[in-house]
Image (cartoon, rainbow, N blue to C red; front, top):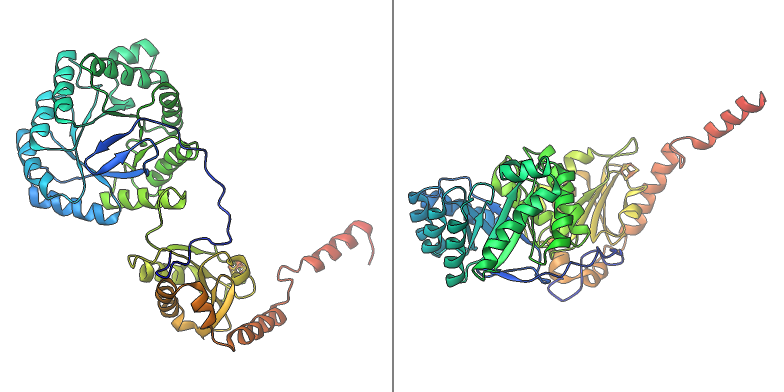
Length: 421
Ligand code: SF4
């Protein structure tokens, strides 16, 4: 929305609804609700030593600024638990302690005040220890994620199911739940991650059909971008489009800020979270392009992002097709004859020199968000449309409306087929 209340995003551009969100129970991780229709949340994990309080807090602040709603920190030793006691009260977002192997670390993290635990049933296996942690979490009102991972599945399950199958992953979660239920603990969310996208998707579909607990989605060990981004997006987006998933994490081999950005951007792209920053679209460029589209799009992206401008902005390589093809964008610019045609929802509002295109986009984006579409259309330069049309006509005349010479080609093919001279 603009500050004067005019809806800005994708007006006149229909967005088919995703599958209805699967109904689940709701849990509360500190201030963040998960499940039962709560907004899908973004998670990430720190890479610092948790005992390094200042370093970890700095990373948590960076992650929160990049879009993380919840941050997980490892709690692998007593010093880490002590670090958490200092980190939790100063963190801008709820903190989840990641526990492997040692149930005492779960108890210590609870003592440190974390807002949630993640337990891996594959490596925390003694029923009495699991129940002890669940009892303590119950007393403190702290939820637990049952974090099943195909790579660390319990060996018995691996043997029983002949490998890390979707059924084996879901059974691992079911066994852990049974221990929790013995002590009356139901404050749970579940993940069944795998590094294989198809296995992960199948496991979550089965988990969704089996449980009504909220699901935490992720493709584990997705790897470095861009392939890691592609894998994580393929798995998480497939499930979200089916209405499955209540909180997500991109597990990238990269600065965790990239995970938070990717998570946030995916939710915005799917319309599952309100857009809070720019959505830059650009044509892929072609032989008609009048500028270096890649360079201008990159310059526009870096000039516009981080300004809290929740609008869609288009960078188009030519004025012949650009404004029409991007008419659904809130704002755009198309290049032609060393000038940029600035348009709002497809209507030309200004013509600027080519070297001022990015600057003009930023200025108009700020004003569009502040003043609204109607006000900015009313303030359009009255000569802009005619100037733009003159540029467009001149380009069409110079290059031919039929840039690919399709008509000529068809004529030649006909002659070749019929043998006409
Ligand atoms: S907008 Fe113009 S330059 Fe860009 S892909 Fe379309 S025809 Fe080519």
